[in-house]
Length: 157
Image (cartoon, rainbow, N blue to C red):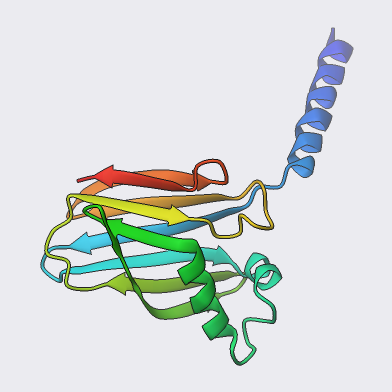
C-alpha cells in the first residue's frame, strides 16, 4: 500500500511539474486610480523587462528606448472615459530589477461613470499573454483581464 501511494505521489509530481514547465505564463498588471479631489486618473503598469526588450528593439538603458516605449504604449493601450476615447500622458518609468513600472495619467477628469481599457501589450509575440487591469475609482474597486481573444473591458462606476 505504501509503495502504491509513493508511486502515485511521484507520478503526480512528475505530471504537475511537466505541465508547469511546458506552459509559460506571461502577464502584465495595470493599476488605475482616480480621486475626485485631484481630478487625475493615474495608471501604473507593471511590465517584465525581458519581455519588453524582446518586443521593442534595443535595451532599456539605450538612448531612444523611452521614445519607443511611449510609442508602443500609445499603440497598445487605449482608454475611454464615459464612452469617449481619451488620450493619456506618459509621466515616467521606474526600473526595479527585472520589472519596469510605467506611469501615465489623464488630467481634468470631473467624474467617471464608466471606464474602458484596451490593453494589447505583448499580444503580437506572446499568445498566452494576460494583461490584468485593476481599478480603484473614488473608492470603488473592480478588475478584468485582457487576453488575445478579449483585449478590452469596460466597467461602470
